Length: 226
Image (cartoon, rainbow, N blue to C red; front, side):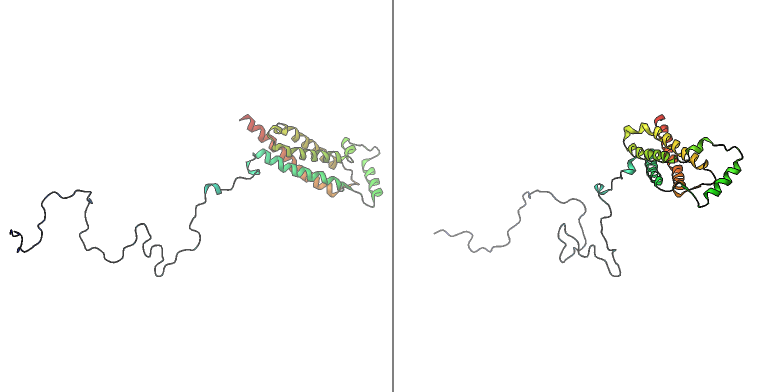
């Protein structure tokens, strides 16, 4: 009977093999040499404990944190903001022209109770031969000039369209002629008559209307030259 040659031998630690070890990627760079922290570590990709929280004696301002508006949230310019300056001036004159038109429904002249006495005094001041100036015949026809200022105001609204802006000088000429007619009616008014509220307001508005429409025509002409 053969005996096991390994029987009776004491088993000790298995000697380490000196063969080649398995290769693989090793971390590069300096390795930490100090003591490693112990305890629970923050999860990968998650917030650190206490991050974003105010410390003792500190307070974060309240309110939305997004201070930058999206590009699509910007307000688009208004319709009037896109119009050129001559058109804006023409629109301003259009409003004044319509107001001046409605002044035709108010009193142009006022007649006092002593009209006969005032008429006699005016005739005596004129001498034996009373001269009638040409503009005196227009005193009682200012309605046509107010109508012209109103028409110029209505036409001025059409200058929003590009194709109608070539008529800007014509409308400006109409407004100037009508205001000069109103001024002639007011200056040629005889002494026994007084200007009414409608005449005074229409004359003042006509000044600004002609100034705006005239400036619009000039600026539009300068832009065409460029």
